[in-house]
Image 1 (tube, rainbow, N blue to C red):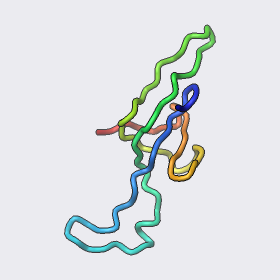
Image 2: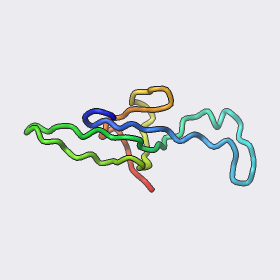
Image 3: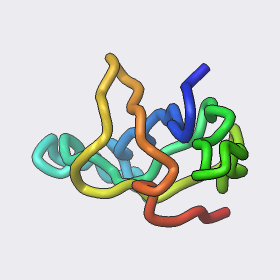
Image 4: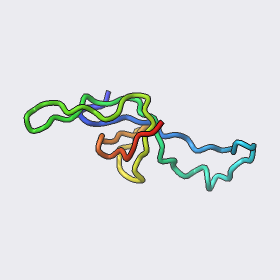
Amino acid sequence: MPTLDRILVQRVKAETKTASGIFLPSSVTEKQVPEATVLAVGPGARDRDGKIMPMEFKAGDKVLLPSYGGQSIKEYHLFRDSEILAKFS
C-alpha cells in the first residue's frame, strides 16, 4: 500500500489493432498512453494541524497522467495525489 498522498497506478497499454482490424505499427504503439488505472492509494498527507487530508482518488479510478514525473516500478507507477491531472469514467 502506498504511503501518505501517493497513488499506485498501472498505465493502459496502447492498442496494437484498431476496431476495424488494422494492425498499428510499433512506432505508434510504443508511445506511452497518458491513461492509467488506480490500483491503490495511501491514507493521505497531513496538513499543518496534523489532520489527514482525504485523497481525491480511489482504487479502480481511471486517471490522466502527466507526461513526466512519478516513480516507475516495473509495470507500475507511483505518483503523488497532486500530480494526477484528471479523473474520468
